[in-house]
Length: 417
Image (cartoon, rainbow, N blue to C red; front, top):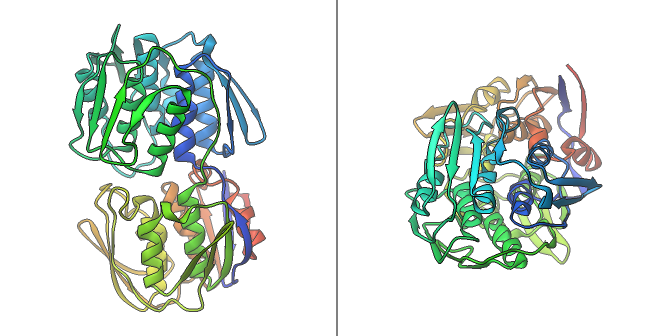
């Protein structure tokens, strides 16, 4: 097993390019199941989760080829409706094949999903929506078994905002008879990117990026070629990296409008974030203020940036409150930050951070994807050396993060445990 070593105290300077967005690439690659290819996708990041979804698509019978950051998928040879447990267990996003398989084949058998241990994240909203569209759903030995010879358009309301639920039902609805309406739909840029990919194939989807989406069923979709959007969570992580190291970096290829709440909060903390023609310049001379944040569905503060922002608040003078409203178990990183000297107290769904005290290097253990990033950020800012173990988590969502940080001047490398 590998670990990442970080020698803290080095200011980050220079230019870094963000990779394609994992959370956009996953559903878009899955959407290839809805036509008979060949589909071509550019700027696909090389991540554990991406490799898992490609294995899953291959296991379903699709032809998948990878060359650099280009992935070609042809699902004309699709010959299975079952997503096996051994492929699905490591990644929750695998459940995204449920809607497309049901739409294309009229049958789907998908293992209940796994992923990070940050909360229950039930998929009942996916299943209720499919039932509204006429699917017969049963749970059998840990598998979701869905059957629907022909899906029908339906009016569906999500009790809570769900990104994967919105994406799954959007893909299921493209071939449904009539019109499907999704109310309280997720508004994330990645959802908009999927809708754009489907429309490019010939789907009729309106309202993406708003709480009310409408999908008018069509008879078929054609192959497409497109480029995956830049990863906004990786962008946000580099913004925080500049802040915690009092750095001056330029982040290429990103779109700051996708991170409105984060950019607003880091500016309140004293970090300069300015848009330039080819990306963002982030400069921090001093972290001047503590700032409260509450995670919310987009366009609110992203739960995927909560752990990283908490590191920034550990260094900010004064008291801040970080409230988590999306996932119930997303403070697992706090105990590891406390090992590095952070003064954090948990009260229900809030973490009270007394900042302004230096962090010190320590052996720490990553517990989920974004917690991994927060520990690396803490290591960059800490006095001494930090060893982050179980870094396979970070490889699920960050492409070669230690190499990108090293090119900015960080003293960071990967080694065997």
